[in-house]
Image (cartoon, rainbow, N blue to C red; front, side, top):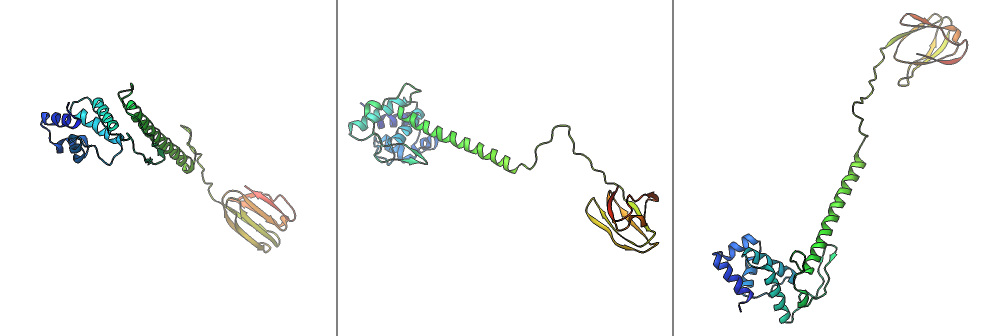
Length: 242
């Protein structure tokens, strides 16, 4: 009865393929393929990987992959070797365990022709991949929330347009000495703050509402662009002029 290696070598030569060509196509190291064909599986790899390489190489040579995996498991069991390393192999945060399996468990399961061991490893990698995708989505959502500066405006809604009010001329005239303070409400700038002598006139450029404080309201006269505005108090006080 032919060994695993003899069958692999015979199938490869029948196809006229070199070891180098097979290695380039299957992405399996050439020295591994040479050892497989020499029926030597003393490779510093877990049996799980050797099974995978055997399965891929058999498929490449149009052979039954599960038969080769089964023969490999039987050969290991016959030699009294554990089908898995006794050391624990941890990749990232996934612990693959160290429980050895006997030859009776080496047969492929009914799910897609894969062994239960291979399915468990694929499930663990799948969970890792799914968890990474969820973490990336969560991070993206957090970044969007933290760095969004303002909520989106509803369609068709435009920002209100603020039109600047044209500047006007305020003329202050006093009939008797008094003190006046004029503050522009728009920006809090004091346009005038001082005493005016009897008969003195002061012209100011105003924009928007003014807050006027006067020491003696009865002595003050106001005009805006030549139009007279009454002072709403007789003595000391403060009033607004739009």
